[in-house]
Image (cartoon, rainbow, N blue to C red; front, top):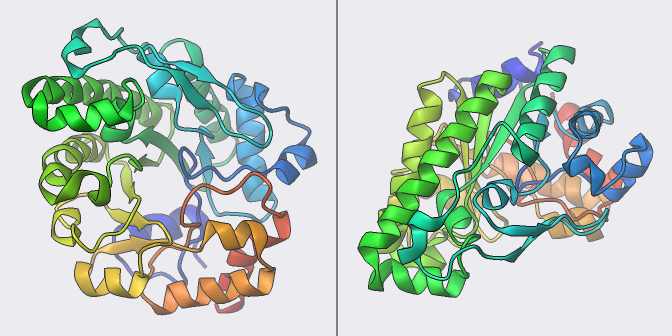
Length: 338
């Protein structure tokens, strides 16, 4: 029987597995719930700033039968904070969020401070990865990067950013280049610390927001730069894109990641029809995981497998109030069918 790490790595390489892995990467796809926090005795928001607490809660996700991976961090604000944004660290119910942007236009990109991965919350993530890696080599450890469009629109008011992609195109690319280089450095540091896979989540870079042309010009181009850098370090890659895919399937197929992940708006059957033999991940409704019953979540898990999902995961980050029994029901269903 495959161990969890072997199963995920085979799935990412599009090889046959005994059953689909069941994972939740972390980052935007946060896997931590209030019930799990209470069960482990960790404290939020302190765990966002403490490597030992971060490692403890990540380890507990696997130990409590939720998912077959470890993953840190538990939010998507670390890069923006490192690039000068102010962040509210949230509570045990609400995730961290940006409260102030460091620039007002893409033309000010050169005034953004350099992101230091040897200090602050970036260092906390790297230290947590090292702690987790020292405890278990058989479970895949997933590091996380906020996608380039989402990071850029977290250091500049999003509506301004999207308008200036066209109006200030040259400076927009300069900003995206600057951001992407820092994301690559953070991803490489996570791999050096022990991450087996890097997940890149770019909810701000949807085809619905950008349209096909800008989606390819900004989302696909800069995501692929990160993907290629990660692959050069021999780590696996997962890319999550939010929103409908109908208008951008051909552009999405140009993303060179090992796996593509979608939210619950996307029909996995339709994705399979449009993306051929690509490795697909997802996409059990996080709304149902939070508000439904275990039996319904088990049924959605079966449907995802039947419709072509190679890797089962929640469609997005878990609601912090999601019952533990609901979260556990996905993996329990997959094990029943072995």
